[in-house]
Length: 430
Image 1 (cartoon, rainbow, N blue to C red):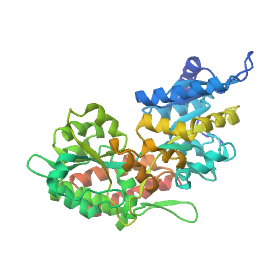
Image 2: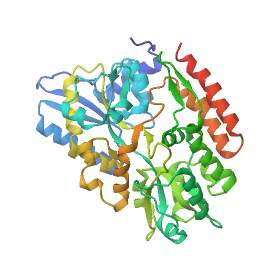
Image 3: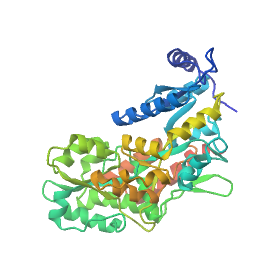
């Protein structure tokens, strides 16, 4: 049952969407064709090209089920989808991310895909990935692309320092990583850049390696925040690198990932903690002769485990052609096609068959390192927590920013995350 009222703004925007793109799931017209609307969030040139080409291939092979490509934007997708759902104008096939699905799934806007998808696709994607799109008893998206956090490193600085070079099979521990960052630091150079303009997801996702959970679900289904020793490992290392060791640049705490690249290229930072897809920007923007490599993030008591929020494909609950929409998703995510989409976005596919493709195991641009990390990726800790967006924005983000800058200590950080955080979550679980 949908409880959100349809506001005047929603009506106006829904009418605009209808004018621009037509109604969801246009039924058979005079020519007998079914037309499905597919909203894609692909934005990189290679990714857009690969997605559009796959749509063309489907349309050539399925003359009676034609897919209309519609371009969306990551910056506005949540509000735009909410408006289209409320106005009855949602696309049939929806591209989004798993951490954006909870409200739509619980609100009844997305179709449960468990009985709609091809058996081969269901079996090819591992359970740990499916968990990211499971809410309650249903599955409301197909996770298909994922992005681990890695360390981009200046190869020349690494070689000159004599430090041990980590691999996915022999990674640095968090303590060893702290010592390495000290050794890589020198006058005018920091060992590591932590771009932490948005600190919450990085902190939670890398915290899985040390056994951090933060969110604990009781038998009654209610979630509470608890800041335990495993939760403190990653924040403590980052805090100490900035405020004690001087091996992490304080100025990067307020930066986004792209903001650190000029300093990385210029030798100001020996390493930068970035998402796997930033490799594309490095390839495109690095000065001639710049040597770099991809290293795994440090490991803790749980090895290289880290949380991810995969990109997903969903079907609108209001679509009159759910079966055909699911068939199109099945085509789009065939192993060979999933590889094409992964290469276009410089990310990793979730499918086991796609991950075996030799193109993803080349040493060039660090593809092989990423492919080895895939088995350690897990659903992000906050994936299904109701009230998480408010907790993140009002509690966790300011608390972590102040802790990393040295303005507050670990005790105050724990108090804010737990006490203030549980008050927020309680409002969503009455």
